[in-house]
Length: 406
Ligand code: AMP
Ligand code: MG
Image (cartoon, rainbow, N blue to C red; front, side, top):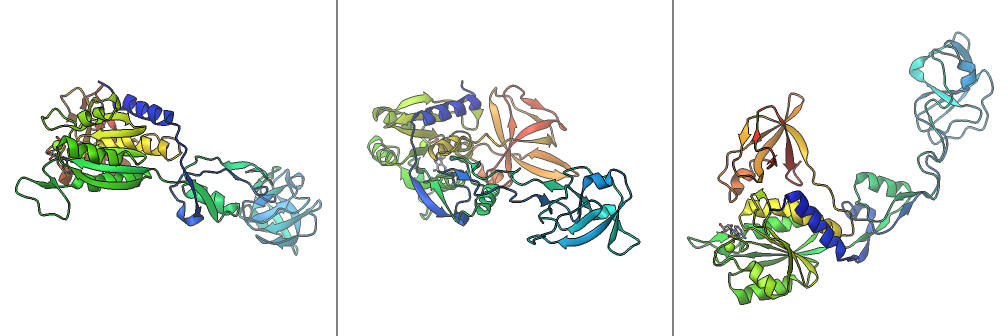
């Protein structure tokens, strides 16, 4: 059976192979967080634009301070944003503030903490040896004018926002979000606003999948629920295939009314896998149907969530014009030993805490893959890899954060 790592690689390869180039849109800078850049951003001038002092102190000539205790004449001061016309000559210095331009003639800045007021008027004693270039970031050393600061396909985080702001961009060209159709299946499933009968349940997967799709950077297109009947299922799947990708929940197990694969096959789907060596989530299906990636995720709510995170998120990344992000695994110390029997990689509801300087993780006792109540009491999944099913208390283990929470 396929490992989840190989399944992710397969999804990325197949989705990238579709070579879809997303449409673009222009957004205000402040609305572009989390989006994928569709253009290059270049440096509009040298950064820093001048030789910048990185400390409050004295700008001087390093040659004057080859030994500690040099006495220099203070000829003025330079504030951040200020101009200083004169040059610094031998035996002279200028008081300078962080962010100010180092004056001509000076080639080092000594921190104010390493100086003392001298005995004579306007004299300062430099208590340290100065080295050329000390506490100065030279003009253009961060990025010269014209340098590409952000390439197209970059995901826009807060540092990217800062770069765009620095070079004066108030608008950015980004890719449109991929539209991900979400269709749950099951005769027992009713709408969230409905009153379920005694043996019916509300459609929690439709809601959680839409949330996961949005967290991943997609636009969720909720299609509601399809009954376990071929014709209606086919019709709703066909409408889902009009979007950039389709995510189904339920109907992929071995039950008599698990019809998703059969219907997809009837629509000409090509499947790349229909089982993974994971729990929960083993019967997950991935294929291409009418040129669109389709995920048939198992219907048990925790299985749906785990498989969306593992499989659908990288597809959203690629369809959105970006690179597939790595799975964001953390390391934490296991608080209590864990042992799993089935030779699969397990994703167990767990709580990650920061206690006495260390990340610790504890498995939460649960009722299996339908138990979203327990899942919602924690903030992550403890990953028990199939290669090592027994983990002792105190071991460093892998943790998959619940996206958006940690
Ligand atoms: P299935 O994968 O269709 O066999 O469903 C597995 C389990 O998940 C069953 O107990 C279903 O009732 C439940 N389930 C299926 N779809 C949903 C849904 N949309 N919301 C909540 N639970 C569901
Ligand atoms: Mg079902």
